[in-house]
Every structure is written in structure tokens, then in C-alpha cells.
Image 1 (cartoon, rainbow, N blue to C red):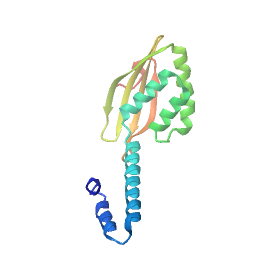
Image 2 (spheres, rainbow, N blue to C red; image 1 turned 120 degrees about the vertical axis):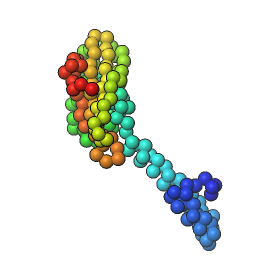
Image 3 (tube, rainbow, N blue to C red; image 1 turned 90 degrees about the vertical axis):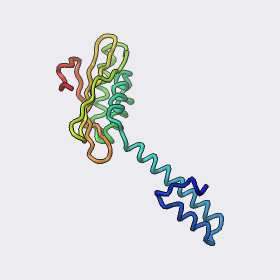
Image 4 (cartoon, rainbow, N blue to C red; image 1 turned 60 degrees about the vertical axis):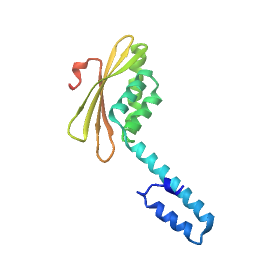
Amino acid sequence: MMSELPWGFGLRRRLIGYRRSNWGNEGMKQSYLCTITLLIVCLATSASADIDPKQSCGTLARAIGEGDPNIVADAMRSASRGAMDEAAAAGAEQFTTFAKQAGPFILAEFMAEREFGERYKREWYMLLFDGQSLFLMCEHIKPDDAWQLVNIKFNSDFEELPAP
């Protein structure tokens, strides 16, 4: 078990020290449990903080197409890292009302992505319904180590959105 622990955290040296101390087996069990818990928390935190803008906009586009306001609001909250909490419910209702009027949802297709520097991205998606199409543009910024959705623009006329 000792060879599988990561050196980067310096835990292996501490665990070897525990084994040689007078703490006995109970101290070792607590040390392993603490190590495993620490690694799980670190992995979960890094996974949630690393949002891919293209993927989050695609998730939002598919949620809009499906027409469930709760899923749309959750997708907006998640992609915005909580910054769009107030606007999420109102935006979700607006999107789902359009989706119900447009007819059955067919697909959400990625169209383009453009980076402006290292901390600003735009993604364009087309949502195709039986009756018409909707074009969606998501704007993401990277204020720290993770991307955050800051704006959503949509129109049934692609020419009305900023060009890719």
C-alpha cells in the first residue's frame, strides 16, 4: 500500500513515520483514511472547477431544446458558477416558452468557438426544431482558474448575433 501513495503530498513520508512510531495499527488506519479522504476531496474540487466552455454551452443548448425550465436553470447556474442565480429562473422560462412554441426539438449543433485572448471565449450553437431554428451564443470569462458563463445571447436570425 505504501508504494501507491503520491509523493507530491508528502504523505508517504508521514505515513512511514507513523508506522515506526508507537501509535500502533489504529494510528495507521486513521492516517490511511485521512489520506484517502484528502485525495477524494482534491479530485472532486478540481473536477468541478474545471468547466469547459464549449461543453457547458452545449449542455445548456440541449437543455433549452428539451424544454424543461428546471434543467435549463440548473445548467445556467452551473456554467455561471452561481453568478446567474437570479437570472436563471427568468431565462429558463423564456427559453422553454420558445422551445414549446417552436415544435419538437431535433438537435443542438455546435457551430463555432472563438477565443479573445486567454480569458474570454464565445461559443455558437444552433438549436433545430421542427418549426424553426434558434441560434445561441454563450460568452465565458476566466476570472481565476476556471471558466464562468457571463452572458447568453440568442436569436432566430443568425445575422443578428455577433459574428464568429
